[in-house]
Image (tube, rainbow over all chains, first blue to last red; front, top):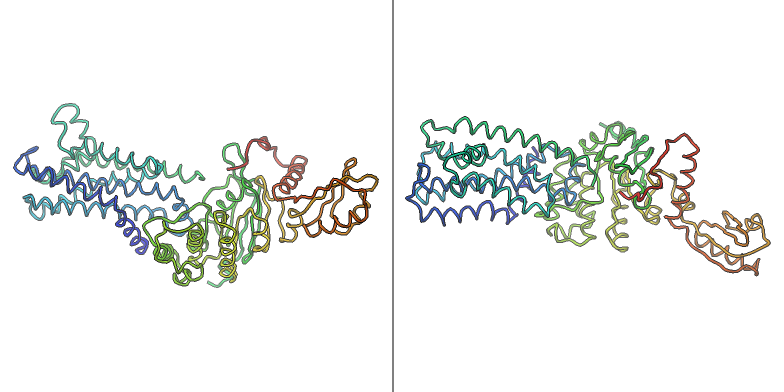
Length: 243
Length: 325
């Protein structure tokens, strides 16, 4: 990895205020606004602030990883990716830098919400905190890939709505704004969506086994593999086209 | 590694062809460019210049033929940092200032030039702290040139580097370019301005409709495409006699009309004066530049004729609409 290149990519990420607002400020504000008045409510067997902290961390970090990859669309549109293709920078490192930036922002969001949760009385042991953060980061892998996929699929004009739509859909179905299906067929459906397991990360940590169920690993794995295949196909198609 | 083993073969473009759908953008182009040569690819829009450059840079894969840069593939040459390029499109990315951008790009190369030196050379030092999104057209162009140059490449490829800037900016750009590539770099640049190709290249490769239609030193190409044509009505003087006027490269007669071709405007002025003196009966004068477009058409037409009578494949899309990519 080229650290100077990475440093400037990180700098560019941090200078993007819209990015900060949507992945960090929004989830924090919502967390305090909604979890604050409902500190004593129990949801799905856990205290609401813990549920909502994880939910907002999922939403914010999902936004961070998705939009980091999706920013490739803008660089494609202005021809910067073509310019980079005639430098020794490998495609792998180009993507790696985008992924690192997305994960960095995601980590900020998760940590900020952790602090916010503590303020509202969320109490977890040290190992539980570590496990929660680790589970969230692993659960984000499909979203990193979907971001890169969108980055090659979308034009800049359509990127905003697409990103907003995709993020909202995943967040809504996954339960970031509160569990929407308690039982039945639809619950079965949303359990096949990776964002559901992001939101469930805190329940998993507090479950008797202390680990998420096997299904969650399968869902995350399958989504990652399928989206990666799609991303590779779209990337190849894009590389062969001369704009 | 010493210089000669690192760059043994210059650039070899061998029977390159590329089509987009039914449009043949580049057809059987072959070129050999020696290390240190400054070559202009001259041609109108749709001539295949950009497609050729994309294949030289390894950005697009040829349908047929190969490109060799310094004895290796374009991809390897790019990876080794031997290539710097200024593409037709390629705005600098946002959220960086000029110095940061050049530093970032420099970090990608094994032996980059000093960033401050490059800023100095390209005249971007005074805008070094300005955001890449707050630059004028000419400034953006210089920054993009700095991006290409910081690699200290053996091969510098510039695709219509002055397309987006005004006449004055164009002159500035070429002055900078001339001063920085003096040291033995191989340069390929695309342009549709004959004057640019003439002033800054050692050699001009003239392209039209995806083919190389002429290849030689600027003086030779200029004679082919920079000429003037005089038309007049004048009877009873043979074409052979008209050829005796000094400066007439070609004389033709169609009925009452005569057509005299000259190499440039100064010559056509002299010929015109002589024509008036010798033949006061001559009338209906008309002088016009051959112009690139027209010269291309003439040269291309010749080329197509030979292609039809020669061994080349039939090209059904020859007269299809638009050779623009």
